[in-house]
Length: 172
Image (tube, rainbow, N blue to C red; front, side, top):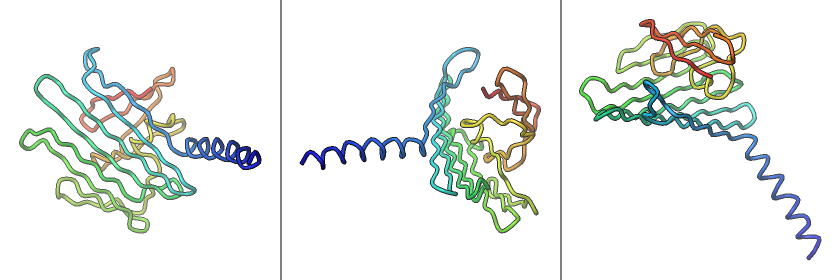
């Protein structure tokens, strides 16, 4: 009986630590003009060559509510699929983007409009910025916009993501 308990007390903590090492959840506060307006919950799971990232954003500003969900699936750190949706409840502002890898190409559908990225591998996405510092990375793929965006270090462990219209988002 003592031997069984000893084995259980050894195996269970090791199993718990192993599972925690391969799953990570981070929760961030969204601030506008120094006021908390919502949260971002980022979850990453890794199992061998497979990685999945799920991002859930919930924002409420005044009477507007925005819910955004993103699901990325990777194999060997190369994006296979990305599904992104944003629901605001306002007519014309909802958005859905689907990105799928087909060999060396990607098919991207943004609100029903299809375009291709040819002969490329997507290794870094915006979702990755919630888990790893983008050292030596100059661009990341935006799962919601379906395009690559420039990213640059601005010092102090902070990075600037430059949107197509010139707006800048800061990650730290």
